[in-house]
Each structure stands twice: as structure tokens, then as C-alpha cells.
Length: 375
Image (tube, one colour):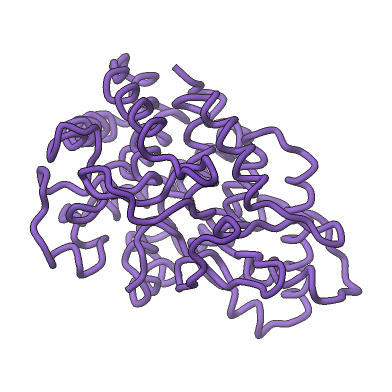
């Protein structure tokens, strides 16, 4: 069974991971953000989600949902960076939000095991409420002119706050029954921080409680990195994983910048790599869990480059101001794009909305986080 917190990135990233071991005689220039953004938003001009998103549900319903989250984040950054495109970007964001909120039952976005055992808390999934909160708040941070999104933002923020600590005295919440994820908690805390900026809310208490607990109890003893999964009693379930950790370092920029810096430095030391001028990232620290599944993405032998981890590392390195490694990671992505330009069959295999959205967000990352800022 696939794990819910490690997004399956595009086969474009699969190719990016393979590039360092395949000699190329093609142009590997850095790919432009507009091309990736146009590809991932193609089909969102109607009233329903395009098949590029809904077809992901046959693999994992979470991927349909997460593709929407990262598409909205990419569009928000694009709208803030290029105000002339804001009307068109907001039109797509509004279409995504309306279609997503239509499915009010969170089980629509969850794997079947969401019903396999009782929920210990209030029955809400932090995965669903947290990402919806971020999508809604990101839209409003571009232009706060839609009352429907103001009310929905407050509703989702209330759900997140109520869920944290609803099952135990610990400041933890479920994404699945008795299953919490660092990815989900930091995503939800980003949404609460955005809610503070938008509406003057005060979420210091849940933010400080989680950060304090995480520093003391959710850190892997061997690597010093935040673990990815735990029970509602705080028992570790999975150790550090790149495709979760890199996003966490980005989220922490708006929650606890010193912790973000420390986790990024540790993650780069444990997971980062370069070969022949291309950057890549591993999914697990040396000696730790190395069983691959669809969520981890393909793993390149010998160097252990992970497609999923490498994709999120593009965002993390940009957020950290690590210009050199970001250039190396993007160079690998450019080489992957070049390969696909000369191989239509590979380009077709690389068509994946989750990966495309994460790439688009990473290439244009910055304006939204800069507008929010840390507490």
C-alpha cells in the first residue's frame, strides 16, 4: 500500500534522476517556468478537473488532491511575480478551488485504509484541511476580493486548530487513523500563518506547541533530521524521507526559520549530491529505510538518486538561497526536458500532474512566501 505523504513526481523527474548516468549531446538549458506552468494548468478552463488530474486517482486519490495544491501555489507565485497574468492565474485557481470544495467528504481524497480503523481525534484529516487552507489562503494573498473564499478560509483554519491535540494531549493531528505526518503538520501550520497575515488571527499557541514538540520528539537520533510519520502518541513510524523533508524545510521558513536552516543543512548533507554538474537528492539517509514504492519515485542505482526527493529539493534549495545546488538540480531537469523533446514516447510517459506542479512551483518559488514571512 502506498504511503500518503510522499508525492509521486513526474516521470520528467525520473528522467532528471537518470540524466547523470546517461551521456547526452543535447541542450540542457534551465527550463522556463511558464512552460511547466502551462502544461500543468492545461484543461482547467472548464467546470471540471482535466483528466490529467483525475486519472491520477487510479494510482492514488491523494495525487489528484496534491496536484491541485502545488498548482495553486505555482499560480499564486506566478500571479505575484507577473501582475499582468494575475487575472488569468486567479481564474484557474478559482476553478480548482470550486471543483475541489465540491467534494466535501474528505474520504474522496484519501486511500481506502482511511476507513480500516477508527479515528482517534475529531474525524478530520489534517492532510485535507491543511492543504485546502493553504490553497484558499494563497488565492487570497494574490487578491482578496472573493467573500466565498474568506469564509471558507476561516472554516478550514478552525478545523485545523480543533484537530491539533484533539486525540491526545500532544499537539498532533491525524491525516489517517492514528497516523500523523510531518509534511501535513507543517503544511497546515503554513496555512495558519497565512490566515494570520490575511485576517489578523493569532495562531502562536498551536505553532509554538508543535515546533517545541517536534524539536524534542520528532527528530531522528542518528541524523538529526525530522522524521516523516508518527502515531498520535508520538511513536515514530518512518524516519527522515527526502520527498517529505525537503518540503518541510520550505514550510518551516514561515514557521521557524532557524529550524528550517538547520534541517536544510542536515538534509543536504545526508541526502544531497552532484555528479558531472547535475544535482540530485536521495530519499533516505545512508543506512536507513530503502524500500521503494510508487510514492518514493524511481531510484537510480549506485548514486541512489530519487526522482521525488530531487523534485522537492529544487523548491527547498531555492527557498534556502542555495543558488549553486539549485542551478545543478535545475540543470538536471533541463537535461530531462531535452531528452523528452527528442523522444515523444518518453514525454508521454512523463505526463504527471503532481510532478509538473511541484516543478512549476519550484522554478517560480518565492513571491508568495516573501509576502507572508515568518511570525
